[in-house]
Amino acid sequence: MRDIALYALTSLDGAVDDPRRYFPETDRPGAPAFDDGLVRLEAEMIARQDAVILGRGMYDEWSAYWPTSAEEPFATFINTVRKYVVTSTPLSSTWANAEPVDNVADLVRELKAQPGGEVCAHGSITLAKSMLAAGLIDVIHLAVGRVIDPVGRRLFDGVGGRCELELVRAVPTSSGSVWLTYRLAR
Image (cartoon, rainbow, N blue to C red; front, side, top):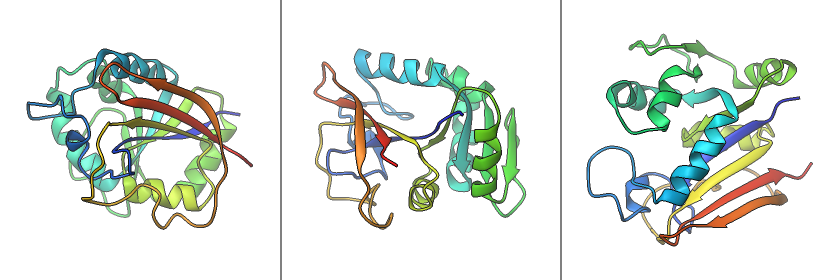
């Protein structure tokens, strides 16, 4: 059975609204700049994924940015991978391999029953929180910047009760960031 994962860029204290604030190397518009270690770890993660789940807000933002981006390897991945967009309204823009879905729980059940690689909710914090609260996430991948940021939403606020995690991987990188992978204990 394939895993359903969550991937988020976060500050050390769980802020998720503006990833460019958590990776201070960023000095240009666009996606946050990662050190070589984070680039390698993200590339390893996306190589295992054959579908993504996006919330509507993330879809609207990313469909305007990534089709013209040259930021590799993520641009090629996100522009070609199957994208399921959780929304109650028709998509207002087109993006290769994107399709709207209205019920994430039904989608997850269907995807888990099919063969394939990891399916991952990228960003989409409102969606991520609802998926966590509903017990739809198996694995959490976090790129954690070396910043404490009091601004913005927190990834795990309001996701329900206590949740035990099993550490799969913790890798510090040259910039002081950390890549964390957890499996939700069931």
